[in-house]
Image (tube, rainbow, N blue to C red):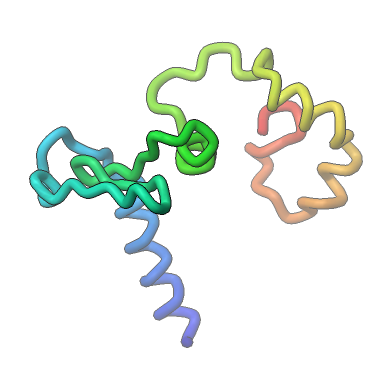
Length: 104
């Protein structure tokens, strides 16, 4: 795949990923649930009635709106305790200067 084709494809995926899910859209009316696998789709959004599977589904999703004091969140504190500032610089030597160990 050429670099320009890859960049174009990446831009299209990024554009789609940032689109908010609306209450009614092309997926409205196509709900289903697979009881054997505890997985379903409701109005275009994946879900499960099994709490463990639901957590797996929602774990990679971003939170909408203001995060408030995200530095007080347990997951941020855990990662911060594992990765020092020098580790950050070594792991991400070409990071945009806006991204630092202190604000990432």
